[in-house]
Image (cartoon, rainbow, N blue to C red; front, side, top):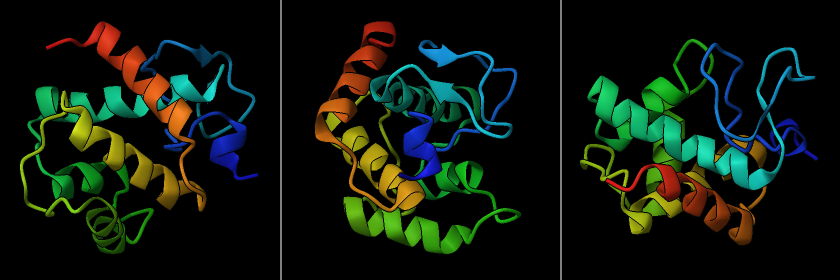
Length: 137
């Protein structure tokens, strides 16, 4: 099992001062956050991408992935191409982070890139519902 899935952190979100609902503290992983269940990990992906848009003005796939997977740690261009190919979203297309039709495939593609396995649909949808309970627009 991949590190991200083992940590119930399918986005491989790094440890930071930011706190998320469902986060296990302290994380047993020295570098990455852990969540109590996979649904909470998917919720964290949605929250972080939404934060990129509303707080940092990053509203395209390319801008979000460049922050999510910076070139200092990743092959960011390949990551963007992968996610764009999996979702059908153009790299420079503005994203609505409150739209399920956009965000579910986006989080699934990030999870696939990070873990090498398909996102479990039930956990993905649970994460979306947990996110929307707090971020209704």
